[in-house]
Each structure stands twice: as structure tokens, then as C-alpha cells.
Image (cartoon, rainbow, N blue to C red; front, side, top):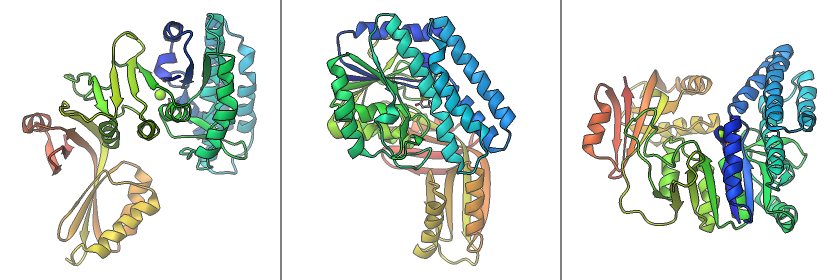
Length: 416
Ligand code: ASP
Ligand code: MG
């Protein structure tokens, strides 16, 4: 049994969907659980629908949703798929959009946004079947049980495992391929939930774990895991082999390689993760497993849109455990995480993402104890396995506001 995940980019155009079918053809006769994301930028578009709806702009929400419907119906036409099979999903959303929002934003977000994956998989399942690739479509909301922490739902592993055993495993007696959605799940009350943006990688890992898969493959539009984002660093190169720990670290520092929650379910069962290009399916890509790695290239991660919050004690008192605890309590209350902190005698500096509301909340709450200074528009550069030469090269032309080094990792806060 293998688990495949195809992301939004792999199903964003007709040619790419046809390419996915070509890839899957090569695996015919093998047992596959295939997880597919929403097509292209559908999730972003659905986010727009929710925002308009929640702002009370029903007409705008419906108008934006019409555009999403039209795109999907066009795919149906082009791929020779029966468009009416999407109707129930359309209706589900439209019903909701006719209501007035009375619940939390995140609740509506999940009810609307989940439809992206349901539409894409419905279309692709039928298209594959017509290409002679037999598959069983599954509504993952019947399998993947979560809590009701909408937009960042936590998985109930016990119930999900039962459902996988009782409902997914038997399907493989009749079919080689089960096709389902990433990113979404449902609560005990059958309300839809999502696992956080880019969560399909994680869904695939949950299935890989529960099905004891021999491996998981994430098919992407890049050759594999790169040592930097090629858009930001032109000399970026493919890393052919990595271990779980390195990938977790990379994700932690902000590399947009793989959803950070993906690694644990795989690591726990020693299931290798392959990252491959759907454009060059025969190339090796990257393998991530448990091996200890001796030599890794420098790994470069840029986090843009960073904010430096400088906290200085008001009366020259030391920032001891009392004041430090106050700062961290605020972070906890705001569910906000500093990306870097540095302590000095009478000050504490925190680098955070630019969540305007949270930054403001933090500044306000700490104002009685600290003088607060906020600097926006910064970049946090992290280099793992750095060399001093590379560090100097990447910091040239920038002002370095903060720097932290360990033998393995250097982080610098840059102002351009
Ligand atoms: N469609 C979702 C997103 O764009 C989930 C995913 O692609 O992993 O975030
Ligand atoms: Mg995606």
C-alpha cells in the first residue's frame, strides 16, 4: 500500500490533470490511497467567499461563488465529466450563504472552504474512471474525525483509526485505488472542519500511518525538496536525501516544503516520505526517512513580513523571570508564537509574524510594564548548516538588526 498526495498545483489545468492520470496509470495493479487538494487557487477563492459572507455582503459572496462554480463546470465540460455530480456540493454552500452569520468566523470558513476538495476529487475520480483507472471516491468527512477547533482541527486518532479499519481497508478488496480529499474532516456532529492551510500533506500522512503504508509520495511542481526557495535564491538546489528531523526543523523555521504536522505520523511508523515532481515523474526527487545524515547542504529559509517587538522595562528594572513570564503568558493568551527572542538585562526582543491584531494586542497588554517599540517590514533569514561566507553573502546590502547562532543554525533579522 502506498499513499499519494496531489496538491492544488498538480490539478490546476487540464494538462496537469491528464498528467496525473498518466502517473496513476503506471501504478495500476498496486494498492494506492490517493489524496487530492482543491484545484489551483480554489481555496483562496473560497476564502474570499467566506470573507464577503461574514462581512454581511451576501450578494458579493454569491457572485464570487458563481465564479468558482463556473470554473469547475468548465473543467467538467473539458474533461467529459457529468457536471450535475457537483450539484449537492454547490447547494450545500449556497444554502449556507443565504443565512446570516450567527456563529464564529472559523466555523463558516470550514463549511465553505471544504467544498474545494470535494469538487476537485469528484471531478478527478470520474475523469480517472473514464480513463480506465478504476477508483473508489470517498468523502473523507466520513472517515477523518476531528475536534471542533475549526480551521486548525485536531484529529481524533482512535475514531479515525476505527473508521479506516472498518470502512477503508475493506474497499481495497474490490478496488486498487481509493481517492479522497486532503485537508478536511468532520466533527462528531458531522460539521465540516479543516486542518489548516496546506493540510493535505498531513491527511496523507494520517492515512499512511493508519494503513501502515510502505511509503508516502507528495507530487509537486518542483523537483523535490530544495535547499532554498528558488524564487528568492537562484542558486537553490535539490536535496536528494533528508531525515525527518531536518524536515521538521525546516518547516519550523518557515520553509514551505511540507505541512509541519506531516512528519510525526510518518516518523512514528518509519514510513519514508518521497517528494517528487509530477512534471518529471521518473526523476528521483527527495527521500525523507529516519537515517542520520552526515553532510547536508546549507538550507536557507526566508520568512518575510516579520515584526520586531522591542520591550524595554519602564524603570530600568531587570527583565527577570516575572516580567519574562508576563510576556510569554501574553503570547499564550493570544495564541501567538515568537519566531525568535533575545533577552538582555532590561529588554526583551521578539520577532513575530505580522498579524496586525495580535501584535497590537501584545503591545497593549505589555504597555503597563514595558516601553514597546514595533518595527515592521523585516525579513528573518535562517540558515541551517551555514558557512560564514554564505551568511555574509546573504546579509550584504542589508542591515542586521538581530543575530543568533548555534553551531548548526544561524538566524538574522534583516532590514533591506
Ligand atoms: N487546499 C488547501 C490549501 O490550499 C489544502 C492543501 O492544498 O493542502 O491550503
Ligand atoms: Mg496546496
